Structure formats: structure tokens, C-alpha cells
Length: 338
Image 1 (cartoon, rainbow, N blue to C red):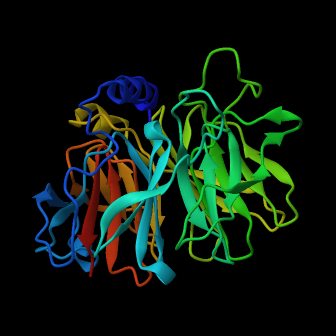
Image 2: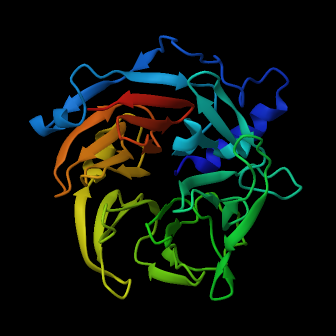
């Protein structure tokens, strides 16, 4: 995410160019297409192959974007939604139709030319789409239709203690409907920051916003264990992957550094810091970060990496966890799992 401000500037230049192809997939994918592939698998422990087959390919199912983020699978529609943050557009991908515009605007609904759309997205227990609207600096609920989309939203939360959020980045929702989200200041303009720290928050089912921690300078991706007893946090600077137990009162306790990724980051090609994640029902964590997707067991052991050697921002599963979808700079990737 450290590249977001740079990419926003780049997007403005691209949009000014009459011949620009940004915002339109370079190839429209159709059913039964043989997709191009990139990358490779890097095993550390044999248990890696319990999740990812040795023969698995990393397929490129859509490309031609600027900075993809926030993928979420909509099982009822058999489609993938994802954000192109600098363009302020959400796209919908299906096997039959490829990637097409879904919501425009997606995360900044003002009238000027600010280009910072939605980032993390998640479905709540009622299958409502909840978005981190980075441009508007709010957590919002999409209240339009999936089949005939229109960019209509309602604000779930916009501030803490009468101060506007920084730049809501990623979120996860438990089975009760509590929303956990990160609020770094990535890409925030000078002079508009109202909260002096970068926080991790929870919005409870009554709509009350609670600060969980302000310790980390760059909280980014966020996830929950399957039973919602643990919260996982990816911090970008320094490059750390952290876990907490969630107390009965909803507080974060027993902080643990699961992985210190600073050395891996320094040795990487892409220099992408720890970012978004998806967590399987068995507790296995798929964490995006330096050069790909790290596969980590529920005890915190790094089993191996799905290597892209590119800036890799976030990921999500389909409904039966047989497929992992990954947002990867200008690409959307698909990896079939065991």
C-alpha cells in the first residue's frame, strides 16, 4: 500500500492520455479460455501441498488495471468483485463475461477529480456488501442491486470521538455482524488528518465504534480466526504479521508477533509490504506480502509461498475454498487449491 499515493498520481496522468487503456481489461476473458500464467510455488514445509497442489498454476484471469484491491467472492452471483483503487471503480468478473465495470464511483462520491476508490470489501451475515470507502473516509454499505448495479451507499461509520477517520483500508466481519477494520493514513492529503494515530477499530452491531489498538504505525490487512477468537493484523511499517486474542469484553489481548517479515521484504523483488489476507475454515492463513501469497498454518508456521514476484495486495476464497482469487497490481489472479 505504500505505492498507493504514487499510483493515484499515475492514474491521473493515465486518464489524461487519450490513448490510455487503463480501466479497461486488455483481454475480455470468456468461458473455457486458457488463461496465461505467471509465477511459481515455493515450498518450505511439505504441509504446503496439503493446500496447494504441486501442479497448481497461477492464472491471470483479468488485467489492464492500475492497482487492484479488495477482492470478494459473491457466491449467489458466482462472481468476483474487486476494486481498482486509483480509478475509483469496482469491477465484476465472471467466467462467462470476464471483468466489467460494476460500481463507478466506488469509494469517493464527491464531485472533484480525486481518484481514490474503495479498498477492502466483505459480505456481512445478511450478504450486504460492506466497503472501506477510502476516498470518502468511511465504512459504507452498498444498498444497490447486484444484477443491475448503481453506486448507492449508506454510511455505517465515519468518525471516532467526533474526528473523521483517516483512510479506512481493510475490513473483516464476524458471524454476529461486528465489523473490524484498519484505518492507516495511506494516501491522505496534507492537512486533513483529524486522528493523530493509525487505528484498528470495531463497529459493533449497535453501530458503536470502538478503538482496539493504536499501537501500530501502518495497520493494513485484517482477518479473524474461524471462531472469531483471534484477530490477525498485517502491519506494513515495520513489516509484521501479528495476532491477538479477543477477550470476552471484545478487547485485544495476548499480542504475538507471528512473523517478522522485514528481512524477507528487504530481499524481495517487489518490496510489497504485508497486506490483505484470507483465512480458511481450518485456520490456515493466506497472507499477501513480499512477492506473493504466504501460506501460514494456524499455529503461525510459514509453510510456503505462492510466488508472483509482483506487488500482491489482497486475496479471497470462493465459497468452498477450492479457489483463491488474488489482486496483484494490474492483474487479477486465480489459483486452484486442494
